[in-house]
Length: 294
Image (cartoon, rainbow, N blue to C red; front, side, top):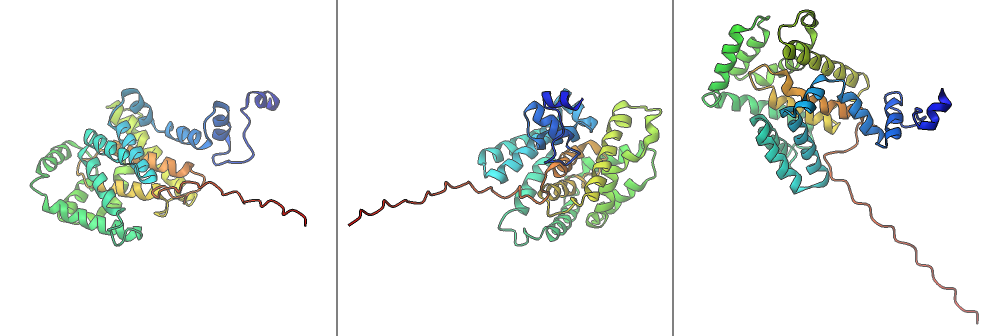
């Protein structure tokens, strides 16, 4: 069996193992890098990946936005930045806000841009103030939430969190609200028995469950740290999108993409937001001709 697998190139390698070497072996068989094979495998564990690819919805455009944004910081490509801005307009207004926030946080003009925890605290405080100041502009969104909350049968926890957010306490309730949005639906496995809405009760539920499992794996492997560029960007994404009062777990599918990439990279602290230096050609030593004998 092993000899037959070796002939077609499907043997697990002894090196470059992260997920047991299975993805690295399949990647070698089909001519892709082990990192790409691992990422595709983890992404396919989330059902929204399948539905997004088949329907080409906004979640796929959000992933394209993330790729363009990372490309801009990795290669300082102005074209990637312009394309990211155009895609953000096509997706959601929160995505455009995310682009502006990311540019501001990572700018050298930001005096604390190297202190990521401090930067996140400042971001949450700023969002809390802006949410209260823009009460009139956000009135339609709040009315939409209130009408939806009246028809929803639940514990009422999320509604209480939104009420505290309306009073300017978003910075304080952010961890609880973010956890509710990311993982809350994934714990209601009873809906799988008798679903009333296939997409909400099954598809989004399994999405939240896979997101929770991925979060636990990142914690277990010690990769959930703001020192990881992908994890840091995911927290910024959550901070911007969680401020929306409407309960929409599918908006956080890009977080799953961030975390999947953070899990699959071999070096969790490899810089992604820094420009990679271009390799310089090595100068060959000049060989002096031997002096003629006198």
